[in-house]
Image (cartoon, rainbow, N blue to C red):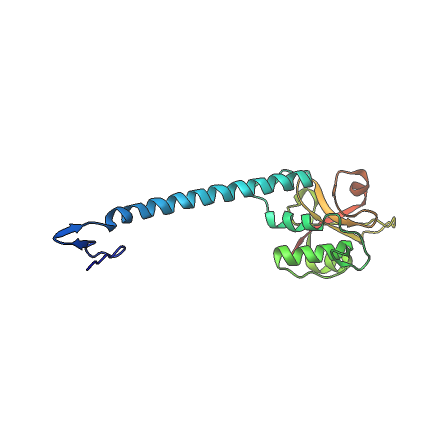
Length: 193
């Protein structure tokens, strides 16, 4: 008759005639080594995959995305790039600027914001200066040529002066706040409360 107890603290043996063989002790010693090796390989490959993803997104957005950045924001926004503009739209079949902001904020941050630019500006954000913008803040513009401080366009700030928005002529794109048009039309930034 043979008894083998591999992972408990009893005597590990297998009887063959009068001989006792210690079977589980070497296996018991190998288990932690194998587990650590598997964990290291898994972590190494997932770190490499994360670095590859950051590199691809960095190229797409024209900014260096580091491990400290909100990768979920960049993934989400990346999936919207190229979506055509549609007034009142809020899907990837067509979206306007506030529809994009609503969708991204819901998916990335789990926050609900108002549907119109004016309501977002007046109700959902704490106003901030351009120099204080952080990743995920909203940027507001007056793009209709009227001399007013009431915004009619919103985008989502990324970093290094770049923001993503739904342009009425080009759909969802990335632009720079340093471009003359956007620098001239910029009103304020907003940090969602």
